[in-house]
Amino acid sequence: MFKDHPLRDSLAAELHARPHGAVHTPAEVSHLAVRTGETSAAADFSHLTALCSHFQVAPPASDSTLFAADMGAFRLKWERHTEFSAYTFIKEGHFDTPFKQPAIAAVPVDWLSSIPGEVISALHIAIERGDTNDRSTDQAARVFDNNSVVGGLLADGKAVWWTDFRIHADRFSRFLFRTDTVSTETTGRLAQRIIEMETYRLMAMLALPIARDARPRVSAAESELSQILGQLAEDRGDRGDSDDRALLADLTRLAAETENITGLVAYRFNASRAYQEIVRQRVEALREQRIPGLQPAGSFLLTRFEPAMETCDNLSRRLENLSARIARAGNLLRTRVDVALEEQNRDLLRSMNRRAQLQLRLQQTVEGLSVAAISYYVVSLVIYLAKGAKTLGSPVDPHLAGMIALPLVAGGVWIGVRRVRHALNGKNRPE
Image (cartoon, rainbow, N blue to C red; front, side, top):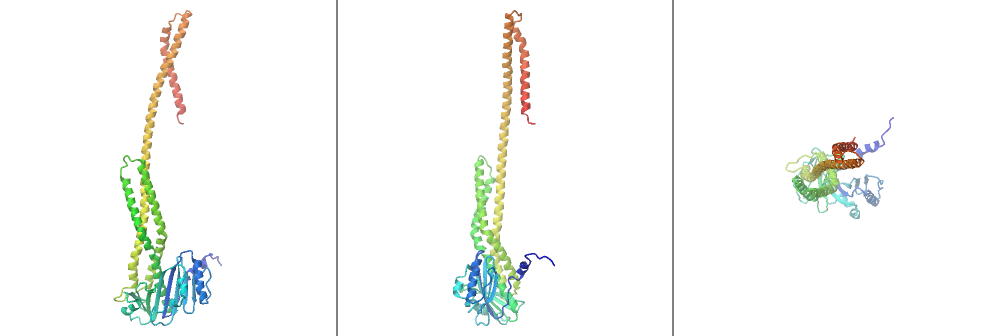
């Protein structure tokens, strides 16, 4: 009846791409988040296929990003994310002591030791059946090696949880979850939120060491920029263009250093912002309620997580401000160079004007000398002609003839020179 968009089915399927699944109480859940980067999907798939082969389970398609299967001793859920792969092992059934025999214990050790990438998050969740009114913190602390624990009520008071947010001797974090009336779907959803909260928290925290390493370089760049701006504010005096060239070289080097730092941290900071928002959403989705005398786990996490993220955000803002200040400093230096060039052009025009005036005066002087010289030669010719005429019998005295011809000749020559000069000026005048 109508024409579907070619991406409609795939876009609609994204809503159900990562289901939380159901977990029957009691159960133990082990989770690994392995940072493998964006280009190791083939290695992840090959390793997952090896695990399926060990338990004689059909492997997923090569382009899969989600896989779930019952391995017999446990249920496996595998997810491929942008930067990491997540393995969730679920073992349902009664257990005596939480975390003593976790779900991951059934996984071959050699397969775990050769897993591609580096583990960024590893945690155990023990979900036991029990009375949620029994909220003894001292009793819960025993399974956390007597560390200080935090926790609260979940699922509108139908479940209670504790954790110490520490990495224990087995290199796993621990979360104890107790409920009696929560449905299997809700239990699975709560377990998934806890897993995502912890995984994305650690992925977001990857930016913190980078921020700490980059902070001294940013501080040094800010100090150097302040010195350059101080030099820009000083009077140039007799330093001239060489000083401006040195400042321009310093600004160029400083801009390159800032871009280098930005390039090193930009991707990690942007990813951490996305992970940070997911952590906040997962903590809010837990809708944790306080247990008297016990700090809520979500509050404990955010109280320490948010300052770390603020450190990264602060450095990001400093880099943006530094880049903007360098750009403004470059504009100021360019303006100063332009003003200096305008002053040089003004002085050059003044010098050219003086030379033109001198040339005009010289021209006028030459014109006067030319009139005198031409008049002298013409009057001399008149005198020579008068002498020749006198020899032939003319009564006119040659010198008298020269004296009479002098004003006429001088006036004619002067008029002729002026006409020539005016004609030349008219040809050279722009149209």
